[in-house]
Length: 135
Image (cartoon, rainbow, N blue to C red; front, side, top):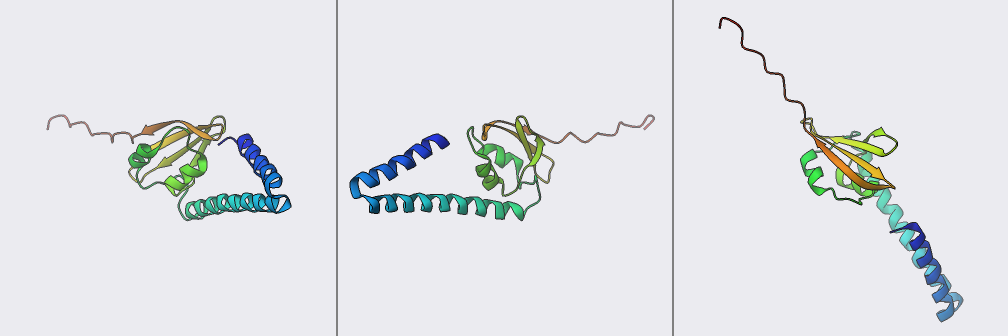
């Protein structure tokens, strides 16, 4: 949700609370807003705690991560999916990479704080040795 819409809803809730119940309505609307903010903060802290325990840019399976991506995901939702902080590749647009133990990786680009596009990269094929002459 857009932050401006969220603030408009908050102001409307306080105004409606005041017109319907007076100051107790403002207190109720304020309590609900504080509770909502605490829920968001707790969600962010839980994601960061899980990500802090894992290596940067590591994911169990890049293929499974790619299958679960969809446009519009926020960075906190990506961190929750991967349980790891991404390896930052660029600032404009924000670009992060997660790789699995097999070498496959997912590179994501964020625009406006939301997932805009992603690429899946497989590891390079190992070089095969050429057959020796005379064998």
